Length: 294
Length: 115
Image (cartoon, rainbow over all chains, first blue to last red; front, side, top):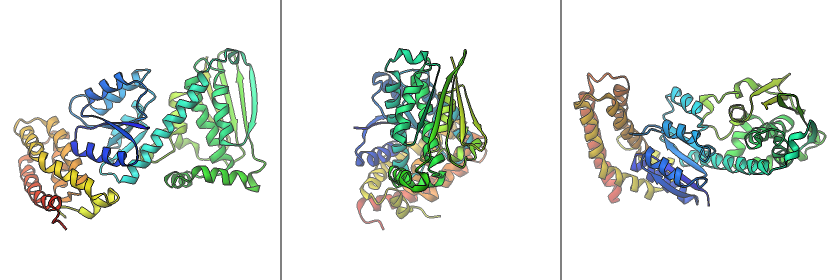
């Protein structure tokens, strides 16, 4: 069962969040303040799929809880959904910089709450699976000088990310970023799913179906993603090239506060912040170079 | 401004009236403490405490659809944030009145006679 920790000093908000999420089958635990949250998190490493964190609380506030979570290896991967006021974009920026990639404003609708919780939980589970696969020791992969793969599907992308991440000293960290870039190459690159289309598909739980539908279209039949890895003396370089039209990549290198409430669109910025030393888009944006210093 | 936008609050909860009633009950039980905290912060000239207590009340009011009371709560939060509490008592008394009006609506709603 998916477990959510709710951290909020308001009893009404706790009732609202817990009531709504329990109805959807989530298991809920409650902390009434930041101190209690950290205590629960420390005791229950790896137990929560997401933390719904109120930003403004007496005592240790949400930002401080987040910072302490990010400092600890056992807690830093748990998805944090920050509850904040939409008007204060500085607060969102501060949260993004501290590592909160999911946002919720009060008052929120049931659908908005469920969409952001589902996004945060599914990202957490996907990253966890990919990291676990990447950390299975295949020592000889670190000796690999170069590699080249051609692939088409999301499933192939998910299989290649943990495999090729093993060329780096910290495969767990690199695998999640690679997974995001490979996924983008298929869904946005070759299949041409736009940002707005994905928002709608995720909201209506139709994303997988649409990906599979587009994969079968005649116009996409021959499209492949070219994925190359090369080791130099001091770095591992990943080059990913799709056959799409490219995109306006610059705005995705950072999470814009205006997009912080969306149900997707964090992948490139999260990869850049967490997985790679450098990400560089080339040409019209259908080619990306990601570098890990070794 | 409306005192209690029940239909809007219910719409956000996808029509879950019992959840909204539970939230209203908590508010009826707790609001006097929340409002007292705001008064205490103003009396003590504590801008940070005013910001926090008004912010917390504002969030609850917004979730309940209490439009009229949310406005002075927001004003007080901003006064705390900007450490500009010169007219805080005036706004506080407005908040007190709006919360009192809201009380009546919520009590009717919780008791089942609200519209």
